[in-house]
Image 1: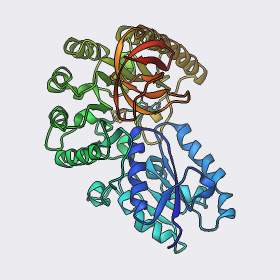
Image 2 (image 1 turned 60 degrees about the vertical axis):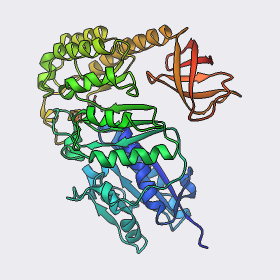
Image 3 (image 1 turned 90 degrees about the vertical axis):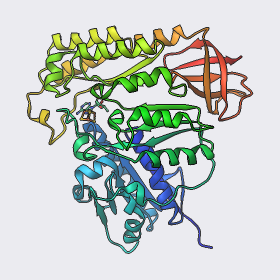
Image 4 (image 1 turned 30 degrees about the vertical axis):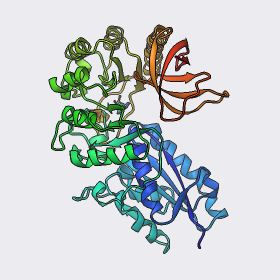
Length: 434
Ligand code: 5AD
Ligand code: SF4
């Protein structure tokens, strides 16, 4: 028997990349690859990249520079770049780093096995097509092995919204939804492998229309025995329809946590961002959601330092954050992305943007801490995902997506534990079993 080839995948960016990396590893698994956690041992290194902000792409190039000497140690080593940097930069990657053997975009990795074979004959393989065929229909069947209790599942890709700062419509293409029956089948298979929670993923997941709306899909998933929890991310405010809001009240397995990016609290900036909603319409929307599901925890994304953002605009963002009270929020300094409309506009002073980012992050952290502290004494349900560092401690997520450490738990991975929260840190909670 030949020794198996070893695959090292490093994943950058969003949860969709995490899902894609899993599918790529499974695809190369059919070619005899097994996973390794050490790049030094690998016969194939695959960087699954993100292009959303500038530094992300630069990180990839420096990582490639670090990986290159490994080829001197192992002449069989092939290096590949997948994901959104691969899509955006294409051949440029091989020009800039000739140690790269393979470049594959997010919509064509169903061709990965055949591309890998080509690299073994000494060629480079490049594929950044947006093919007609659906990659998910052409990937080999997923293996049957047992797996971790929480899984990501991509149901929608791409974006037709064209926010002025964003590369996604160019790297992932236009909005496409996977057929609902495929999603239901894949979830059923995941449940048979031990999965109890699925997070439905899409760049605009609430624009899902795979023969059902997202609300209808969630209700159909709710009926699958053995599946206990459903989440979805990321959503656009304009696609939060009445039925999806209602699903937060009437679908027991849908968890009370919603990631709903708004990007800015200033209508002037929202307009320039091409967001097609206002701060007020966003706040009204959250009011409607909280009316049907009062305990829902909100999270969001923010960009500071967008071209022409004034101190007054930034204040409006702080005001919006105060009004919403986020349990978690991601905030980013605006990063110029070539080819996007905002890239051509006058940029603001980077030191000013840094300072705003710090002020926003301080406010977000304060809110997050206060919410975490308000959980002390509460009883929550935790999906147990792994063992903790301390003996007898288990780690998992609450229904509100808090990371929870359960001391002296006695629970097994995959259990849903009823616990009482006894302490709060900024990023996690400590609990005892009930
Ligand atoms: N600069 C900074 N942040 C960005 N995001 C998207 N594009 C940019 C950019 N050019 C942020 C948005 C989005 C999240 C995924 O990344 O907040 O919601
Ligand atoms: Fe990018 Fe806007 Fe589409 Fe989100 S909605 S992926 S931020 S263009």
